[in-house]
Image 1 (spheres, rainbow, N blue to C red):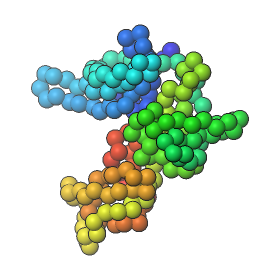
Image 2 (spheres, one colour):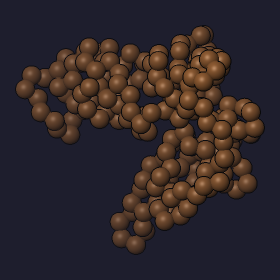
Image 3 (tube, rainbow, N blue to C red):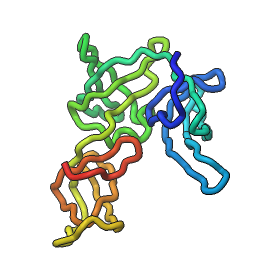
Amino acid sequence: MAKVSAVEIRVGNLLEWDKRVWRVLKCYHVHVGGRGGAFMQVEMKDIETGTKTNQRFRTEDKVERAFVDTRDMEYLYQDGDGYVFMDKQNYEQLTLSADFLEGQTGYLLPNTDVQVAFYNGRAIGLELPPSVVLTVTETEPGIKNATATNMFKAATTDTGLIVQVPPFINQGERIKVSTNDGSYMERA
């Protein structure tokens, strides 16, 4: 088992906390001004019972990462409500449900390399790359000579994910999106 700093927690990580194994669904850094200090707000789901909880970890806290067998896999295609992955070592295929992936399906494009975590021989989590490149399929027309401002507009990508993008992004452009929080990073 390896202990990691609370600020190193990412979406898709598996943590051992309160004598259970939890999958991180959302996490973000919160800094309260004054005497409050900084902490990580983490939403997690118990892999055995499916219950969810929100937990705050101080930034200096150490959290136990669960010992799991991770395998490099490649996302192949969607089959109804399932998503098919192929093990890159032995070419076995594994189908995971949309419920299991919980919000990560918007980042899956065919041939995307991912890591699937197994605990006691059962798939329990999926770790995406830090960012993915998606194509904008629908958005309002771009504003000519617009520069980066604090204004954003909604853009739908080829996976169905809706991302807030700057006003100069047009339909058909490829953008880099963070898989941690779904935010626009840059043009690709």
